[in-house]
Image 1: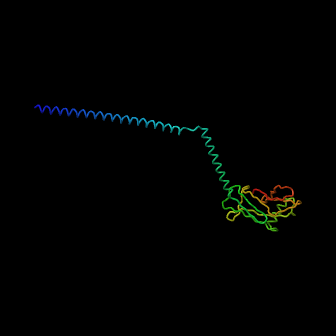
Image 2: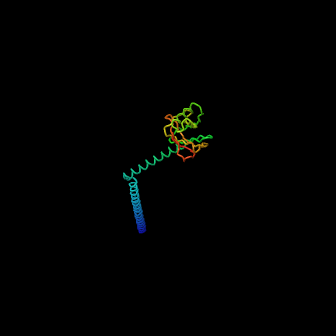
Image 3: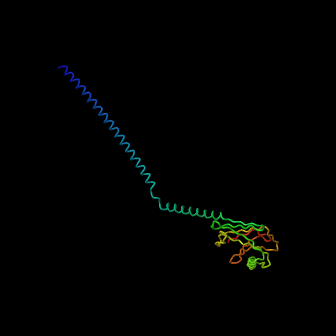
Length: 220
């Protein structure tokens, strides 16, 4: 009977020890759980802080621009577009240049406005005594101090597209005529005329007295 009582006491003591150990484990679990809760709470607070900072940045980024700043920006954009278009048009016009040369003259033309892409310049010297020559001579003589007795040379300058002559808007082409062989004495005068359907227009360039006119420029 005594042995049974001792065994029971030992078993009870062992159970008590196990309960204490289990209780310690429960307390440890509680400490770990509390630690996780503290970490989780810290993480939530940090996330909220980051969210607040991001919202602040978004507020700055989406803030309304003052009206005068927006108007100035729009004006600058419009001006930049206009300049770009002007440059593009100028480059397109500069790409269209033409030249003719023989033993007497160099006739060059530069587009002052956009012309058809496949446009060509045709230059032809009028034959003296021909009907075209006589018509041009009469128009020039009517506006020249020298009259019919002067010596004339005429060049017909036209522009064609696919072989067909086209009428250009006034001022759409600048023409330069350079003279290679014209030599005049101090007793002679030199006059240049641009003849079109309106008549003969004197485009003579100013030169020093007694000197030769090397070139002349005019729009057509």
